[in-house]
Amino acid sequence: HDQYFYDLCDRCGILVWAEIPYITKHMEGGNGNTQSQMRQLITQCRNHPSIICWALSNEICVGGLTEDLLQNHRVLNDIAKQLDPSRPTAIADAFMLEADSPINQIPDLIAYNLYFGWYSGELEDNDAFLDDFHRKYPHIPVGLAEYGADCRYDLETSQPERGDYSEQYQCLYHEHLARMISERPWLWCSYVWNLFDFGADGRSEAEDPGLNHKGLVTFDRSYKKDSFYAYKAWLVSPEVDPFVHLCGKRYIDRVEDVTRVTVYSNLPEVELFVNGESLGKKTAEDHFFYFDVPNVGESTILAKAADMTDEGQIRKVDTFNEAYRLVEKGAVLNWFDIVEVEGRLSLNSKMGEVISTLRGKLIFMKLMGKMLGGGKKGEKKKAAGFEVTSEMMAMMNGFTVLRLLTMAGGMMNCEFSKEDLLKLNKKLNRIRRPKPRKD
Image (tube, rainbow, N blue to C red; front, top):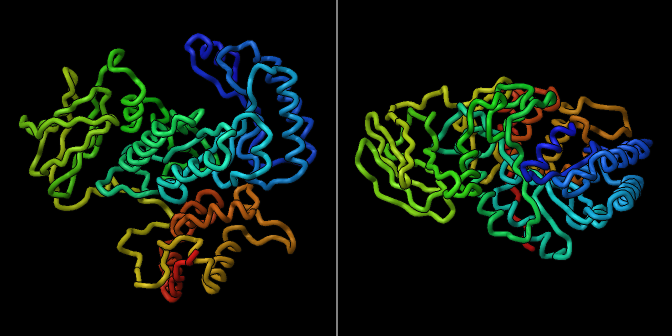
């Protein structure tokens, strides 16, 4: 970072994880460059009190783990210790890296970039992953270096689902993670990814190419998404800045007869009013308050906590407002387009389930050929710069077929049309779902 950035962090008391740009894939012959950068980083910045650790790399094992990579990390760790023995060293691991990987034995601190509940798996898998690591290696400080879910703030729904880019799912995601973090005092750090939406040339998602939408605030800093206030409720003392925030104020048109309204506040009690009539008061130790509100005609909703208020409107409509729904180019499917046959596979099946069958594995191999564009015999396949390693495959097993192919459109320049996907769904419908394994 610019020295001015570190100066501001010093003044404001913001703790800094300082890291060299050694990411994703270890480059043979690049060791000298990384070692030079580590020396320069520490020499230039070691007098900044805001810096708490020197990070060796970030998600470096995505491209595969080699002895040369491990040895380079040992050298980087030694350089950091020689130049500044007062600070610990750290590493940020990709979420597909096993806890017992030898690279985790090199630095003082470990932190994982976990995205269960967004890219793959379920929200509860974050809890299980960290608990399992801490149980196996209680002597290794482990933290959460990245976590988040993409949100385009104009997309709204009363039935949030992973991958829908809605403001409601981002809230659901961060509510779970905030609770999880608070219940695990042994986590040495947690970093939301990210405070702001940011430029990312390799992405083409949510009909908004070139952006990563995981920010709690929009790219132009003009709009704080609802999830921003979830953290304000957790982290800001009511003695400093008491507040109440009514979520979903952009979500006006609603089809359900009774709708869920969420309120965030750092105050202990919230009362909700609909057209001036109280629906009662609620208390919540976790700062998240939920109310079931009758949805009839047009209603003014007001949330009140102490002297703080926030207000919005809802309106009963007969059909869902399509302006709230994402319509992407390429793979555009509604849930009702996907035919589900009992006991058979479909686009909604997990990749691990599909490739556990012979016919499913053959279908997947053809899909990979299309996504990766072939390649010479004996050459390692690559996707968006990543080698398809066993670790990468383990991660992909948690994706649904539809989610994987939708993401492939943006990352690999390989779009699947609606017709392609429906044809694939028919093929999957012919394959029996494998029986659960008995351990």
